[in-house]
Length: 221
Image (tube, rainbow, N blue to C red):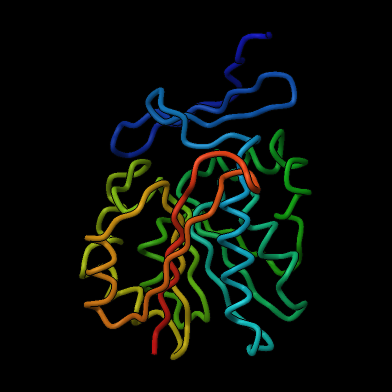
């Protein structure tokens, strides 16, 4: 087996080291040495997008915010089921991740950044939801869950104050969707306390295989 080759690095504001590796046709992104994502396992991220868009089926020109570009799989899955009139804003904290998706990662998900419906903002998703509102759906795939593994400042998003901000950034009937590698009953209680109607689903990482991940779907009444 060939060794992993480091092909890109970026340092977060909090000092975390984000590195892109490649081995043959496979890629992975690690944060401080811990694997955040890889190009072999993305079924649950695609489920997050498709199940979110299903909940928008009665909206003809939905405005969707996707927090976190990753390797483009969540964005691609959303674009594949969204109508042609949709607008998708992608908030990506790291400019290097956008560059990687325009470069070596682009073919993985069929170059979704080339879609005319997509606007990329290299910005903290927290700042974006304060300025641009309302959305029909906010899909967050920025961490490994409400513990904010990737960018520690994202912990505010999952606090009661942050959830109230997200609630205010949605149209009535709008959806907040969140990917997590684990269940989180404390987070569920905060979501419900803010006023969302919550549904959770457990899905496999790779179709019917791999570990189970948790998807949170919170609807604004």
